[in-house]
Length: 119
Image 1: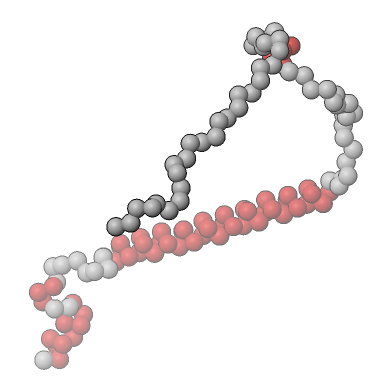
Image 2: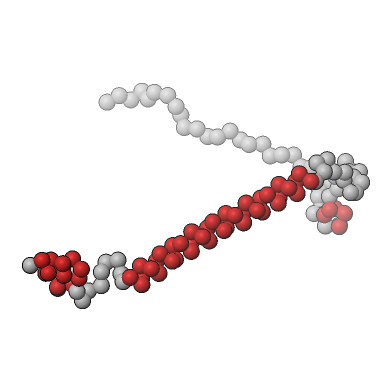
């Protein structure tokens, strides 16, 4: 009886010996473990790379002159605005005198108030 008990513990029930366990085989479990560990290592390396890039950027900002002079002289800006279409000669024909704006008539409203008819 004790021998059968140890066999069931070591090999599982007799009817389930031919089936694949829920966790897969030992090689599949080892492959999942390797993929998980390599994923964690890749993420740590990416974070380290981002940290190095940020440190270099901070170092470059610290070494740069904060109020560097402009390399070119500022151009005087013309306050007169020009119309590029008028300069190119593409202007619509405008009337010599402006026309008066049309006036809007008041809206026609129905009569309002209480009706004298009662039921």
